[in-house]
Image (cartoon, rainbow, N blue to C red):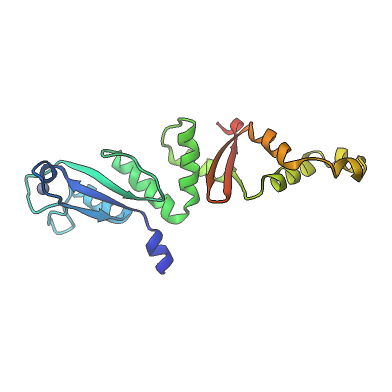
Length: 183
Ligand SMILES: [Zn+2]
C-alpha cells in the first residue's frame, strides 16, 4: 500500500569515519533494515558492508530522521529506536503519545507510550470537548438547570480551564491531551 510505504519510518545512518574524511556514505533504513544492520555490526545478512565499503569503519551516526517529525540526535539507543519505529509504523498516534511524554520529561519507555496512547484524548473543537465532558460528569446538575442558564455557558472558556489539568500537543487542527494525573 502506497500510503503505508510513504509513512514508514526511516533513519539515515551515516558512516562517521567517512563523514570525518568529508565523504557522505550511509543508508536510509526502515526498522527492519536497521534491526538487521545493527545485529550484523552494519553488514547485511551476507556480510556486505552497508554504510560504506570499508571494513574497518565501525563508527556511525544518525544524520537524518523521517519519523513523523521526531528526532533523537546522532547517537540514540538503537534498540529503543527500532522499537519506537515499529510502534509508529503500526500507528502514528504512538508518536504523539511519545511527544506528550517528552514534554513532561519522561524517559523512553515503550510500555508507557502504549499506555499514554490509550489514555490520551483528542479534539478539534475545545468547546465541544468541554461540553461533552461536563455533560458526562455533571449530567444531573446540568439537567436540573433551565436552558436559559445552561445556554449561556461559554464552553470554550470551560475548556480552557479544563486544559490546565492536561498536557496538550497540537497537530494541525487536532489537540491531543492527557490528564496530568496520568504521569
Ligand atoms: Zn566509511
